[in-house]
Length: 328
Image (cartoon, rainbow, N blue to C red; front, side, top):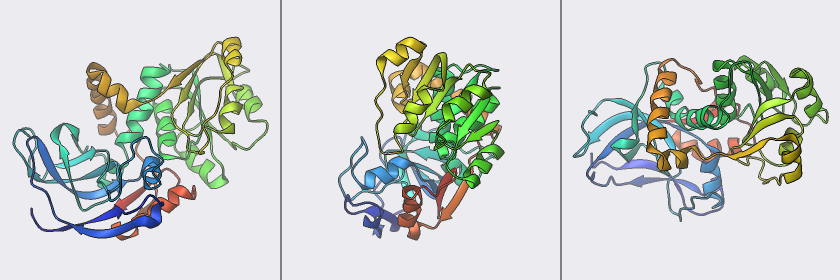
């Protein structure tokens, strides 16, 4: 296991152009650690932000981005009972995924369900956990209720669309082009609207018999967030997932008071760390969903490791529909 391997290394906080393919020497495994031969890495918006030093976790260069991978176990350390060389797995970490191998704690590894390919497994966990925590733990979305999913053509947005339909909700998405809207419809949305439509809020109300959306799932932020608050139902739940637009919105407190809606910040990973019982329940539920192929990712772009920089640029140019994957 000591043969060198290749990795896409961020050498400066100047964006994707700083990624260089370099040879690295494997480190020995510690207790409870497992080495995985990476078969695919799923790209997430934080991967892009980290190359600019703009994410809340801000590693200093040189570092290897990549929060989410799938592959095969090639070495196990002490205290890793339950896993064996050759197991097909999916895992995540704070980085290191844009590489031919990665070392992670055994507790971070999940067996890859047969329903998912390596690329799908690498793109499943983060988006699925986020969508599940949002719609189940936070919004408590019930069959027959409605949800407005902003940025529905993105990876996490599309997971929310698919999970919303799985839970029996009326799902309304937003997507910026006709091509993206078609993909979101195929993912299960009942309706898909143009986020730039000045009548967006009224159309959402029309589609919900004048009530507005019971929940809003917002990974976008910016001006669209303000529009979405006008489309929310009395007593609705507004889920603050992220700020892919690059703009953090401000919410008017008296508007939330008048409409009786709740603003809910969403940090699925941190919630799991702080509440182990919640994490255990959610992992059991997510295991069953993965086995059933629920929230199967739509992957619009696939690149080899050598083109990791271009893969990140796809995210930066908003050209991805669903997810982007690096395949080894």
